[in-house]
Length: 268
Image (cartoon, rainbow, N blue to C red; front, top):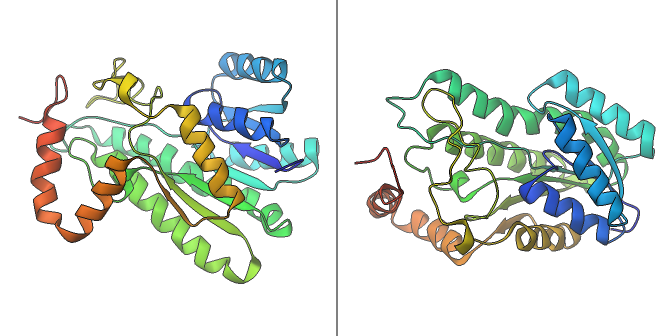
């Protein structure tokens, strides 16, 4: 990864920031994007203090125009794009019968269309350099989670898009990775949307027992180096994917019961 130009959307916190630190430590030139200029600039300064060659670009991933400008700015700054990590994401927690549809639209705009736009405008450079497109998905992209209809739908859509892209890029030697972490310690549950679109603020799960963002980033880094097609993380995540293929009806009950145990769960 020495001197590779790596774009990471949503790179100012969580898995995105951990990926920025990891790729930078391995000699990559790192670009991070985010909507919050203050937070983005703070992260850029902290990464530079660690010796990273980093460029920050303020961008709303759900905006097609912002993604086009981002790709142009990276080419102007570094002269190329080798790897795109579509990491920016948001979650939600509400029963479908209760949730406002705008909440699901917002989740889809960020998690699915954000990756679609970024990939569209970075792809010509990635093809030129036989690089990689990465989508940070979720186990929820293999198994629908109750009270996460919008989140699960966005991850299923993301995985379908990336699988199609990987097939289309077969003869062009472009690597496409679908990375599906299990529960990982990050701020995604704190910023998750409730039924009316307000932020959940507090995580309903014990973050201390989860895989760290740094461990997740190390796995993603190795998967990019090895040009893997899929990365499914945590024993629980792998077991969930496997059982769901074999026993989907049994998993309906198992997943329901597991998610119903969360504090203040909308499931009864």
